[in-house]
Amino acid sequence: MWTLFGNSNFTRLFIGRLITNAGDSLYAVAAMWLVHQLGGSTFHTGLAGFLTMIPTSLQFLVGPLVDRWVLKKTLVVTQLMELLLVLIIPVFYYLGALNVTVVLVVMPIVAFVGQFSFPAERAALPSILGPNDLVKGNSAFSFAYQGLDLVFSGLAGVLVAMLGAVTLYLVDAVTFAVAVLLF
Image (cartoon, rainbow, N blue to C red):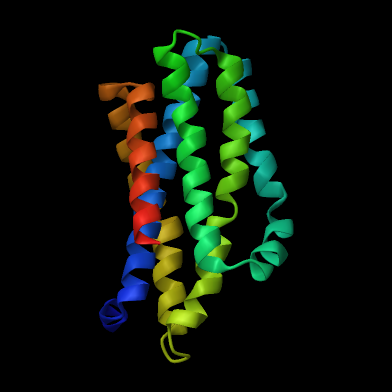
């Protein structure tokens, strides 16, 4: 498996996935924390979870679109869009206009845009890896996508308690910027 990292395109895509996963975990924990803080109720927190899951239920529509688009451009544009969307929260916070409605509107949009990056990464793998390495590459991405999510989510919980939710939104924006540069 380590031979895959001799391929610079694979390495950049893989590191981009790790960074994006870390950012997604930070965002998910920070968003739920912020909704609870601003809304002050479990209803708002539950609504936030529901709104975030709606785009996941539409994921079956994403694959055919990603297959028709230029993959590199899809990866870069989705990361840029997520970066800009995530920055809405700190901007509203610093303007003194942040409320639970803003967060509840931004969350499902960020979740929807995020649905495009993983299928685009998976679709890119056959073009950067040979047929003999494809299974290893898919395994590495599955580990990065799902296996490390537990670690990143736990870390996000600690960081949100230490730094606050709005700060994690800024950190998440940086992760998207780094991913753009890698992709």
